[in-house]
Length: 264
Image 1 (cartoon, rainbow, N blue to C red):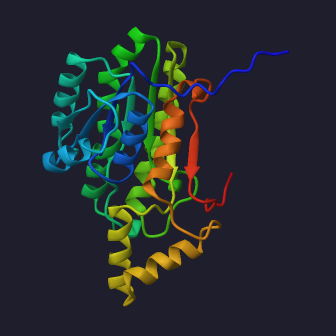
Image 2: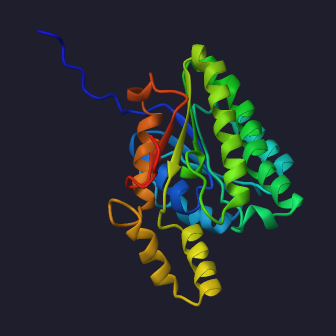
C-alpha cells in the first residue's frame, strides 16, 4: 500500500517579508504565515499601524520595518538591511493600488508612479532576497495583483496596465529561478473588503449620487458567490502557495474572487 503523505504546510524556520502588512490583505497573509510557523517581518510606511499589527501575529520572533513605497530607493535600502540581518525565504509583494479613472484621462505621471510603486519595488525586493533563497535552495515569492490581469476592470485604466506588466514580470522570474527551488506566483484578489475597496466604493457613490453600501451591494451581486471576499480568504491562498505543499506550483495567476473572473 502506498505511504500516505500528510499535506506539508509547516513553515518553521522560514523568514517571511510581507509588504503592505499593516492592514488588509498584507496583514491577513502575515497572520497566516506566522500561524504556520514562519518568522515574519512586516513592512509598510506607518510605524504605529505596524506595531499594532505585530500584536496580532501568533508565535515569536516577528519584527517590523518602515519604508514608503513611493520611494523605491528607500524600499531598496530597508530591504538590504533586512536581508543583511537575516535571510528571507518568503517574499509577499503587496502594495496599495492606484486611484481609479478611465485610461483616456490618465496622465503620464500616473503610469510612471504606479510602475515604480509596483513593478520597480517588486524587482528591488526580489533581487534583495534572492541570494538568501539561493543559499537555502528554497524560496517563495507571491505577488498580490488583481483579477484585471485576466480581464481588465472598468474605470481602472492605470491599474489594469501596470498589473499586467507585473504578471509578466513574475512569470519571467518564475522561469529563471525555478531550478533554485524558488517558486514565483501571483494571487489575484477580486472584490475584497479592504480599505481600498471601501475608498473605491465611496468615490463611485459620490460620482453617481448613490451610497457606498449600494455600490458594495452591486459589486457583490456580480460575484457568483453572492458576496465580496474577506482579506483572510486571500491570506489563506497566499499561505498555501508559500507552503512546502506548493513546491511544484510556479508561474501561475490564481484568482481569489468568488468565481467572478469571466476567463479561465
